[in-house]
Length: 74
Image (cartoon, rainbow, N blue to C red; front, side, top):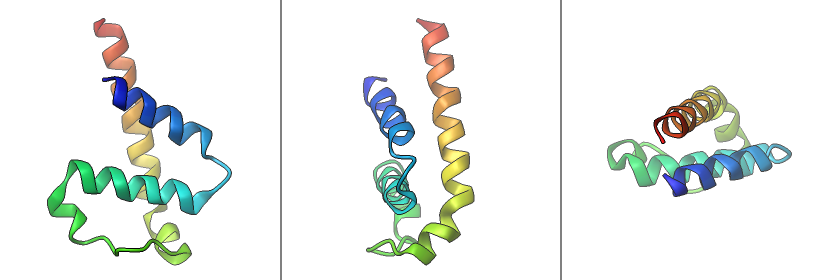
């Protein structure tokens, strides 16, 4: 749970660099879902970042929702 909080906090702080946020998304996908990670390119470019933008926003919203649920459960 702490790692999820730290990751969510990092995503919120990194709003000024779109590509870096997408790299974080790629890292999360690689860590959480090995099957999905095979579909990701090894280096994330700006065009990859633009293509992954909707996925990033969904993931970010999901992390916030999970954080809220965990905090209420505690």
